[in-house]
View (cartoon, helix red, strand yellow):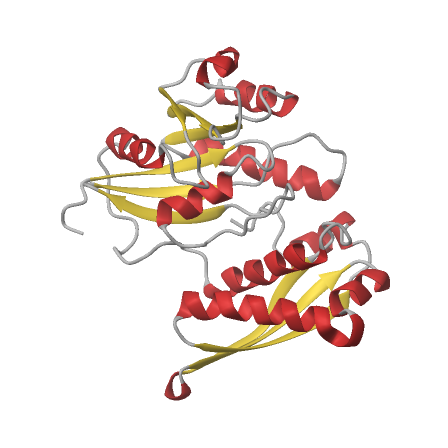
Length: 296
């Protein structure tokens, strides 16, 4: 850690489903953030930490930016854009398979007010036809990088350039840290990811997860976790539980596997389902589940 002389914060922004979470996971070498073919799976700002050469970089993965009249979606867009004033550099991620959309234009306008370094990251170049020059209308950047976050192509060069761009600064986190998010938060995200994986198109985005209790038992090398999956309607609860309880058992089985890999211990995971009617439309409920302006 004595070698670290430069440091800074980096925001990863873009519209939903461009690969921001996949890139952050690729950077840190661990699955910190859930990924899904469905857009809007990232709901909070997630912090990932990596030391590169003499620099420590602290990454913020943000919710996808998009226009919406829904309170919950407005929260996520506000959360993403508010990050831009706090960082030394911004990675503006775009999708090589989609080109420029209204969301890109909205973000580009906000980036015009940012003083830090700005890098355009064109993701999915292994499958898309648009390249960096096709996004030149979005503004001027300190660098343009064509990558595949999923395969890792071009990511190493991008990371090296970011490390070079960091100003002199202190060490913010110890050298073994990869995130500042508590284990409870990561557990909630893992469970939510498995809900997305297993319910397909049956369940909308009205799913939240809370860890009710967590007890580590070092003598037995086990962590005991009790969590609740919250939905908005009884019909959604039935989907989560599944016939004979098979769906919730499979959700628990897959989430437990990921948690054991993260923690290096055995995990006893007990899941329940609760109905919180219209929670995505309630400021009180949004705050209760961690989605409010003061959560980070």
